[in-house]
Amino acid sequence: MTASFKKDEQMITSPSQATRIGAMTTPSKNWQQRLHQLDQQLSATAELWRPQPFKQQRPAWCQSYPQLTQALLDLDDQQLQRFSHNPDALVEWIGHYLPQVAQLDALSRLPKRTPTEYSSPENRFFNGMPGRKRTQIEAFASHVGSVTSPILEWCGGKGHLGRLLGMAGDQPVTTLELNPELCRAGEQQAQRFGLYQSFTEVDLLQPGLELNVTDHHGVALHACGELHRSLQRRAVTHGMAALDIVPCCYAFGVEQQYQPRTQGLSLQLSRDDLRLAVTETVTAGQAEVTSRDREMAWKLGFVELRNRIVENQAYRTMKPVQKQWLKLSFSQFCQQLADREALSLPADTDWAEVEAFGWQRFSEVMRLSLLRNCFRRPIELWLILDLVTDLEAHDYQIELGTFCDRAVTPRNIMLSARKRVESRASSSEIHRAVNSGI
Ligand SMILES: C[S@@+](CC[C@H](N)C(=O)[O-])C[C@H]1O[C@@H](n2cnc3c(N)ncnc32)[C@H](O)[C@@H]1O
Image (tube, rainbow, N blue to C red; front, side, top):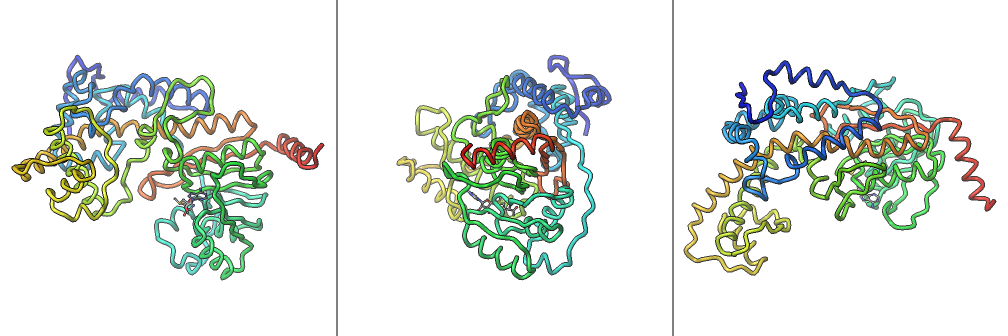
């Protein structure tokens, strides 16, 4: 596919120049500096990624960048699929129109982490575990390195990761998990393998929760939003020895605005913005994708219908729809939504026309949203670097990079922090003093 250019769109003139922009700004491991660069560039480009084409038919940037808008709308289905599943190809293509996108992409690149020595246990260890989960926990375990403190597994589910780490080393494992059934299933597994892994059923977000985490090694695979942030917070406040986190679902636990840890940042991220960071569906099956597409197209059809009836056409948020409504006909689906909103639908509605409108809007939304998609990783990295910078300020040494391919999980960034030895000694002393009432 070739891109055509027009002068009014501040674009660069050749693909090789785009590549050079990336190369010029080869990102360093000065994480704090990188956070501030990302902060500045994300703030400057907010008008490109904040508006949601689902809610706004033509975001304001469509006026500023007519050629890019047309090129997006002209993509055929195959091209749309390709760009939806290949973020590198997408950024390269859009970078021809908007060099800022190529620059942000360069700033968001992370190294692939180097695995440490790891040998996989026999297959029966993984019995009953979905294949993708096995790949994730083995990849995680192979990047942890030596463990010299008792392990605390945060939001561990059935404790698969903790079990694997307990098997590989000689440290006791405590798995913390909200769901009692998962705790019980995990306990049985641990007993089968004769491991010293205990489970504690606990709500890790309850206010005032007291936990002894000092000098522990915290691990968290895909602990959602506030849950992984609560582990990071405990690390810096209680002096944990080590931390390995693979974050996900950044919006979880944020009511309105994300509160950064780092001083001097200008970006303000709303709950919606945080959700953008995790909207990739690389692991969804075909049935899930088909259902998601129908839900979006039908909702857009309903919004159109509502706009024709209700005078105020400002976008109104829609509560989640029940999945069984998607098995109805389009008219029945709209009737369910109309009943919920106490709206009476005209008897002479041309359902085929409204549904076709919804699918047309869906096609445009998918294409125009490609621009927003280029900003997912930069926002994700900004959020992670905010935690990194805080950890560095509290004397932790950081290792940050990808621990597996995106196809295994798009949430593939692993943050490892190790408390510097001198400061570990002093934080233990402080905690001993606090605990003994000195
Ligand atoms: C995405 S799963 C990850 C589970 C496991 N780490 C893994 O990768 O298989 C998130 C887990 O967090 C648990 N969880 C959710 N809210 C929690 C809370 N407030 N306190 C403790 N655990 C919680 C869920 O029950 C779930 O098992």
